[in-house]
Amino acid sequence: MKKILKDFAFIIIIASAISACHKLDIPITTEVTPSVFPQNEQGYIQTELTPYVALDGYLAQEYFFQQAESTDEFMLTAHGGNWYDGAQDLQMHYHTYTKDNSLVNGNWGWCSVIISSANQAISILNSTMPSGTDKQMKIAELKMVRDYSFFMLMDNWGNVPLDTLYGDFSPKTNIPRAQVFTYIENDVKSCIPYLSTTVDQTTYGRFTAFGAYALLAKMYLNAEYYTGTARYNDCITMCDNIINSNKFKITAMSNFLPMFGPTNGPNSAGSQDEFIFAVPFDANGSGWYGRSANYRARYCVPRSMGKVGAGAGFNYFNIPYDPAGCASTIPEFFVNFNDPNDIRNQTWLTGLQFQGPGSTVPLTVTTTNAGYNQYYTGGNPGGTYTYQVNLSPNVVLRQDIANGQNPYDGVSNGFDVGNDEIGWNMGYRNVKFYPDATSSSRNQNNDIPIFRFADIVLEKAEAILRGGTSSSSALTLVNSLRANRTTSAPWGNVTLDSVYAERCRELSDEGWHRNDMIRYGKYEGKWGYKTNTDTYRRIFPIPTSALTLNPALKQNPGY
Image: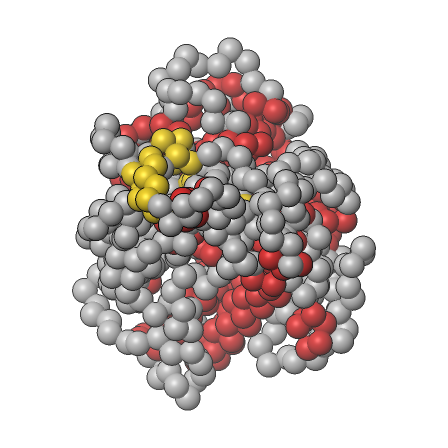
């Protein structure tokens, strides 16, 4: 059984760290104040949970979209006007996002809510909980949730306000990014002595000292971009704190795919091996203020492979809903998956499809001539047309519904591929977070890793190649990962470019690709239909909603 408790997965996980025999059954509410929660152990646990629960809000959907759609990893196109969504996805791909972009607005607000929730919980525990080691640990964990949220703001928006005091509603202006970096760094370091070093079911989904080291390693690897000063030796030190603990390892090849599946989590071998900090998701839970939002399969599974599928009763993934199938990758990213012996290739749906893994029976769809190709010009548009599902590598824009341009002309810029079978089968699909057939809805039980041991190994290798000092070999580190991912021969040499390609393979669909592209100077490149090379696009505009609520904020340069 993956989850320790359905609905509110964190409750018993966290409670068990305090008392293995203590039974807890308290519903999560949206407001935590001393008048709501009694000053006892149950109330303290409940208070601590609220910011953790808030983390699942936009993480698996809107936040991932913003990180991936702004890169060469992921496109979410319109189909006959549907999924156009006010051009939010078009803007991400073309790098024309504005302060009114829905993803920009939503994710800023999400991060701000997490920070506010953490500030409130810290205030309550400080004022109501008796002094002691447990109090110090809880407050340190809450500060880590807040620091991770500050990190997301800093990484995405650069100069951001630092709101650290509950009840202080005075407008706060943007703080220079380097100062935000220093604040997060110092705050994380101050938390480490009080964080748990236990790695087991009782600390799963919680920030431990190793989660703190992982956040610092990520910051130090990017420090030259964030602050102008390289910190590669510090990155190596943080990585070594995790590696030398011997509490994590690169999971075996047989565990790689299940590590991201619906049964991942504290009882999964792959997750136990590699997840340093992960956010649990429960398909039946109410989630963040009534929202539980791991809908990854909804967007990535082709429509022909869902509940309706290729005929009466056919369902490739046995999921209980019709997938949207509107998201896909593009060739510029998929080119990194060039080793036929690599287990990571199996996270993709490509080319001709068959009726199940290992099947040789073609997966076919029966429609009409016009249903297959809406631009059909023959004399029998309603005639029966049957074809084998074939996911093509290229995504071709065929119409511009938004601007009233419907006929296919080969140069349409409305980010619309058409509402027909041709359009719905464009692009390869990532199903790393495998569809959850046990769910009664389109939600999934797959937990989302934030920091993973394989990432730490690659970060250390990259830091060494960028000039950091270590007794370890970058080549040995990368080959230790590849030995558990492919049966191909070990590499004979390693470069920054080959580490970048390995990161694309290893961390696809995990929300770090934008961060990587910026660090490697690739974010201004050309891919898909994007030609914009503006460097100021490395950070997003401060959203309209934030500027309205806080007049002290200053808009980022270029917007």
